[in-house]
Length: 336
Ligand code: ATP
Ligand code: MG
Image (cartoon, rainbow, N blue to C red; front, side, top):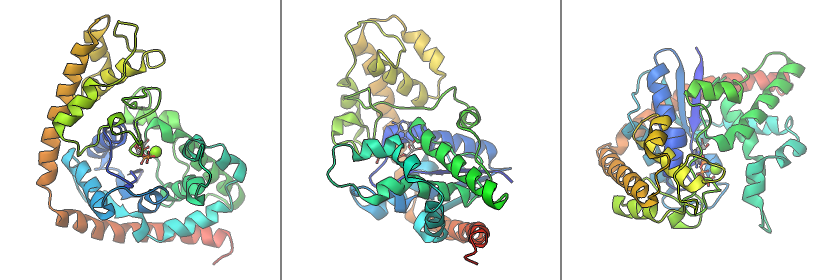
């Protein structure tokens, strides 16, 4: 049985970018495929601590599963929900893969460059993050890992690590699909990259310092609408979907399409050539605020116990699968 796998760090609450780029596509895939595929949704709690944790960690962690449920995730026996640190094989496998990955390839990761830029001191976890991610994926023989575009480089690294191990030790790992095929599987023409509302050249990030840059799923809907109204656009004076030259308005068009589950082309056709940016902003602000209102109501109705029950069964499953794969690798390295 094939496996689809996803995880979102809980160093803070998620943004609308995380939701539209990673959570919502995962929910759609899960509901479409979970009859025939394993669907692994895990909390990368170990990944989360590479940066300062903002807010109540355990609350973020439980909520993050609630977000999937509120977004419509249907749970059945093939959907597995677990916390990374409750499956020790992740850290074990990471160490062994550290002895496969090279300093050169890790130094080339743009996320590492971005996150370490201008800092006097950077923790080693930030550098090693992609290796732990490779372990997260390879332990479960995951074929599809629906992530945002910013994670494609890490996925390629995972594929390279898997192929290197297979080449040397025989077929131990399932090599995840190529990024192009991942994107096809997700049903989008390209990876989604929701932009920062203040600096639309950058992607929206939950760790961004400016509150106006990002919409958090817990934002008061009115406040979120204000952030959209004050989003940076451009001085071309004509609405056009052009992420390179007009990333601000293009971002708004993309949010409008994704949040309403409309084809992007339809939204572009509606707005193309219009000159009143304010009208577009009003429309998107209203879509975002009504989405948040409904979503937050759904979240409030989901009890914590439901999430803890999912962890219990999911972690038993995950430990079983992961320990078997780890043992194979340990044997290859003569550790067992
Ligand atoms: P941080 O700033 O802490 O790195 P982040 O917002 O980049 O936070 P991650 O936890 O690194 O979030 O990524 C979680 C998932 O969300 C990944 O699949 C990633 O590709 C996706 N993602 C992150 N930012 C965006 C974005 N702006 N648009 C679409 N998808 C995104
Ligand atoms: Mg990130």
